[in-house]
Length: 253
Ligand SMILES: [Zn+2]
Ligand SMILES: [Zn+2]
Image 1 (spheres, rainbow, N blue to C red):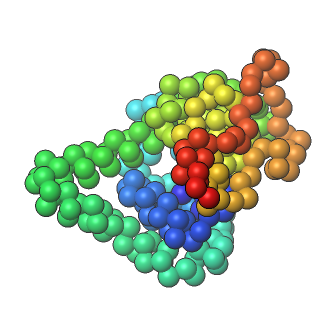
Image 2: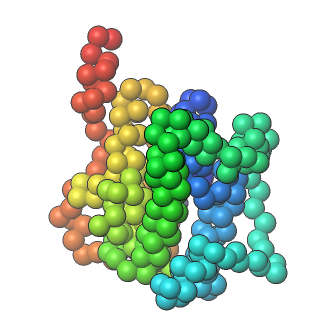
């Protein structure tokens, strides 16, 4: 959802795009268009020289948790974002946007049928609390504490890499890298930065399903981007590699 619909960092068949976006909606934060608008506003605000604490996770952890999980920020003069018509006029996305909360029924009903109330509670309610709460918590630290490889000069806030959450977040916690290269499909840019989201994309690329993956080297050079870490020469960059699983699946072709 994030690397595909929001950043268009790779291309895949439409059915796969719909599947990935639907799975993203199941996290329980918003519909696809709602998520795009939230992300666009935050991205835009964080690139300005000054920005409201709400949009940069700039308050203490208790206040920020209360804000992010319970409140909305209403701007007097909000910036206008236009969702590309490819998404805005897509019947599937319009339907999911209208019914995003109801989409939980697609998993809730089978869970209840298979395991009763306890499966329903763990599989829907607890999962949503952990996912939404975890998304906020990683977002909080990713804008406050943690390693930094790059600095985006002039930005109101820097992203930080949260090593402890790199694997668990499917690679999304390499947020310093994301601030540096928002359009990159790879978020764990060095071999010591596990990025399961990238592993999946790389396997699908090897299978020929995912195409036109964009990596930092293909993105326009940003003059405001400066390397902060002094050890980059000693670190091993991750590159698209052959995938053994994909090779095994394709062995007869
Ligand atoms: Zn950020
Ligand atoms: Zn992003």
